[in-house]
Image 1: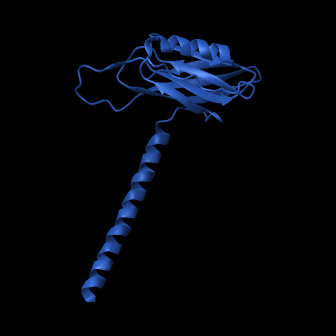
Image 2: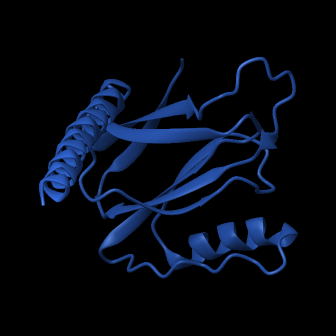
Image 3: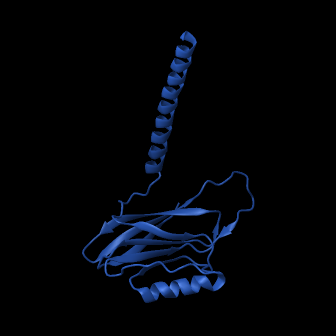
Length: 167
């Protein structure tokens, strides 16, 4: 009985320490994430609906898509080199609009963050922060990517202007 009690106490002690260490790790990860974010504020309702690292678009481009026809043209362009092609997402353009970001040729894998810098009655200024995804040190040859990101957000009747944040 005493042996069983010692085992239970040791197990309880180990589990307690595990949860404390796990909590500290999770909190430190969130702190790092918020420290790396851009200076702008969060964009309400912004949702990433598509991300691909390989497209046939070789230059940087940002675009606001407000109708099905324009969205179809974009997917027709990127599906030229894909078999089978990517399906065109279904979007209710009476409620939502899309923000398309094509990064062009990138050496190494990247990620982006969008944030609202300023908003007036006529326009919304969105910051585009491009960040590297964990680069292995001492790698002389990095893979080449041609990524695009497609975000959905609530429809706004304003001009949307993008400002790329340089590192």
